[in-house]
Length: 357
Image 1 (cartoon, rainbow, N blue to C red):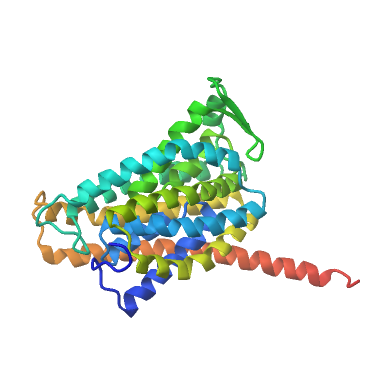
Image 2 (cartoon, helix red, strand yellow; image 1 turned 180 degrees about the horizontal axis):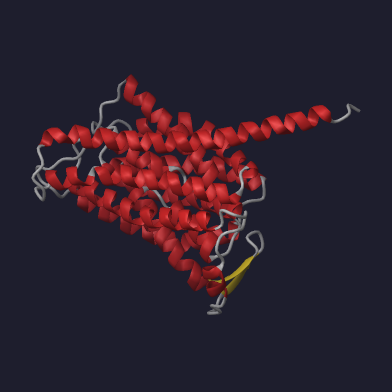
């Protein structure tokens, strides 16, 4: 239901935790360009929100936050609007399919219920996709970052060189990203980004790495373009989830209270943190979030009758998952904040040494 569903009872403690989720997600969104949903979706599930409600509310919240982040990155010249609009063509199809599949799995499971009384089947499906996709992304980012730990080299260009050889028309030149790509290279990335955004609220962790490693774009432009794309995907996903009754406006407003502040901090961090550090921090945060979601999969399997685990263990599964999630998010934010504070202090020191006209 829109605006006040009864899937979760909000009290002051839960409301505060949702605001903190929003702030951390906002900082990570501006810094990484993922929308921060990889943190907020499982975070809401840990607080008792069924997976489909968490995804629906998060993708709705994603629209406004992406709007602010895209504006900020646009001011810094980090958005390729032409590329973003072309990717939308197939991302909308991916979102439609994802919303339909999430709705179907949410209604499966009979007496098995997840953390907040939602379908254990739906939560298992969302968690499984989350773990599968983001574990691959985390390993790839960490391997690439550690491979170049001796020097501050850019990301691997092997896939980008292969993609550039595909000349199947139409081949389009993107000036801001400084790349030239076939439409048939761009389309599958848009489809996958839309599907993941609609399934787990995390499209950026396919979109951003694909833009960097396959399209050959600079990290900052990939992050800014993903946020531009996320504006439209968020709006389209919000319409479809709201139509199905899977959006809670209370959660959205609380997420905004934290995220609209955090996103400016994260966006500034991309200007002062080296690309190698961005990839390393991103990979570590994602890996911890993946472990956090993997911890509760046995709980869902037990609720569906596939494993014989005493229900009293559910609170321990969920508690461990929650601790791992917040450790990953808070650690990442601290790294970003420390980098931003150091850069700001250095700038002030240089300004103080300049002669006053």
